[in-house]
Amino acid sequence: MEKRLWFSIVSAAIGVGLIIAASATAAPSAQHPAKVVKAAAGGTLVTELNSDVDYTDPQLTYYVPSWEMQYATACKLMNYPDKEASQGGGEVQPEVAAAFPIVSKDGKTYTFTVKPGFKFSDGSAVTSANFKMAIDRLSQPKLASSTSFLGSDIIVGMQDVLDGKASSVSGVTAKGNKLAIKLTHAAPDLLARLATPPFQAITASLAGNHDPAGVNTYASCGPYYYAARTPNRSIKIHRNTCYKGPRPHHVDTIQVNVGNSPDVIYQNVVKGTTDYAEDGVTPTLYAGIAQKYGVNKKQFFTRPELEIDYLALNHDPGRLFHNNPQLAKAVNYAVDRHAYLAQRGFLAGVRTNRILPPGMGGVTKATEVLKNGYPIKAPNAKKAKSIAGGHTGSGKAEMWAPNSGPGPLQAQVVQYNLKQIGVDVTIKLLPRAQQFVTARNRAQATYDINWSAWGADYNDPFDFINILLDGTSIGPSANNNDAYYDSAKFNAQMHKAALIAPGANRNAAYQALDKAMMAEDPPWVPILNRANRLFVSSHFGCFIYNPVAEVDLAAACKK
Image (tube, rainbow, N blue to C red; front, side, top):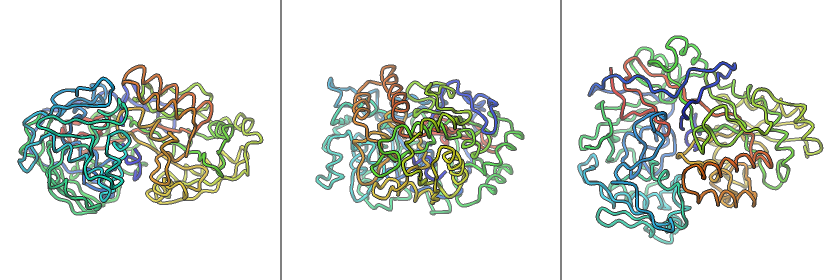
């Protein structure tokens, strides 16, 4: 989900080793959880963000630090356990649901039984109605949620509410302790979607609020709740004293401070006045941090993200890659993935030439690249130039990239590489948020190449292949498919794969799609899968990195 990368998201595969950006040396294994100390109750955990979150509102936020916090505050029908990847942390399981749902024979109706005993922080009981309220609110056109797409394509009646034709989602009914969800077509990834923050239970008072500015505080039913927020300054999260569920909840308060520079945040973590640099520190510091504290020991941890950094090749009419698969292949040979990754600094991730990241869709190893010839160690300019041949069109391309972070230097790497095959690249640098929003508008997406990145909304290959590359979903705006890739052949195969039940057959279908698209008509230049680099103070105990939710703030304790 671009939410995880817009401002900079998510799983760790067993056995994944990280490759140091500046060399081929393997980093220590990231699959093993840190040694857990005996949890101490009470105290305040202090975290810091360089810039503020987008929202704290559960139906509006689409940003990784917010989703990380909401793993501590929300209760959901389905959720991920407080475990690392190697312990099954990426496997969705019932939380407020008493068990897995009963599914109709046609796969289009899911019936959940809601457990008794869960309470909101205001003391009110959680019922099936609170989950319907969340879906109804998510669908309200006045709220204009950017996460409504997580349900609008499959839940009966949700699009009608979004279009202003209804006030309540007809396909969701709540009666007693039963919640029934009817789908327009079978969607085996529904349970993973329901484990995302927008589908958490909400109170009636929040359900009636459709202000697109959102709310800063509200009652929630997880181990914690948002008690106070001053935008651009601080967020205060308190323990939910009404929570009697099984999830951990050690500290009394989670204090989130906003606005210090990454260098100041680093110093605060070193001093111990801050316990966790929530959106990281200056990338150039990571080598020194690793040398001083070690890797995956006590204070500095690395974990693979379920994520892809890529160059979207615009396939729309009038753009350089329209009906031009040979040039798309040539660019995949030409780009220097090693140099591109090196701009992110020490232990930044691993290079790739495929769409699906390690940990998703049966891809189990960071080194499990496709045997399509696209090089991950060094570019093959000779091969690229041979394939490009007479397919360079005008010989000119416009590339969009962020104007901060590694974006400008990465764009220069691409510019140099493509010059070697006869394509002159003009770089247009934009604030990342502006670049992301503008690229989603089809009429305004005038680039040929777009610097892009995507982190998983939930743990299923649909969220990478279908969400990012299904041409039938392209509209005038709000497009996640920033390559504007629209292949009738592959659209049909995506739709077929989406109906396969989770497991080996579903994984095989998506891996086949990945392989075929990259070999026949590449939508992108896949470049790297990021690693999350996590720096905590000597006082941070009980460290758990859930592969989907990231740092488990509910499980954290002070030592």
